[in-house]
Length: 288
Image (tube, rainbow, N blue to C red; front, side, top):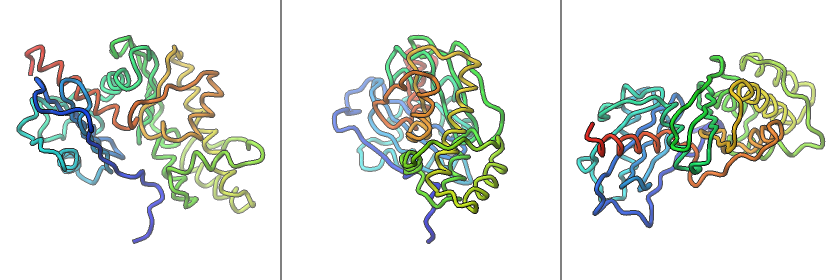
């Protein structure tokens, strides 16, 4: 089977310290995105287990597989979950969810848990769109903005370039800094034209690292213009796969003149974390 350079590595995790036994409330959050799906399980609001895998052609099937994988290797069974909240692109298609909540609310709440209550601005870089979110000390959304529907400013755009250049997506950011001088960013705002432009640069003799630098720079600037519109208030955090791309993150830090917060866990699970926390709140308020 040919290598798929654009895929982030799938992963799962179980806490060596947290146990679900004895917990008053065990909840689940399932974030079905256009590109990846995460299932997060929390015991009394503490992270117990999660899975992070590729979204398939069916949202319900992807949700089922993610939860099954998150539970794998544990003695926790689905019937012990008090409440499940679905979120993300396919949130209404999570067959076992008790409720659906928007990814904007869930990412803000998840970022509050993962980065701490001082976070006031969250950038959620998903596979199909980019959201700038302002929130309060409890992770409640105050305001938000979304980018235009174009893959050039999203995680999917980075996947396209990864595949085009045959560079594993987890190495894109690091390789983009292996240049003698920072090149000008690609000019096209549409990923189709940006891909064509990149192909032209390769034919003109540009090395892959230089092309990656040009695209990471362009993506960082597009994100910067979105954040400018909403106004960045410290602390600033990023959720989603792009948070793992140092090529974009460090260039964005340079444009913003500030440092992005460091997450405690995989930034791709923020939506699922927020959904599981909302589930806990709903149970405790008797609304489940």
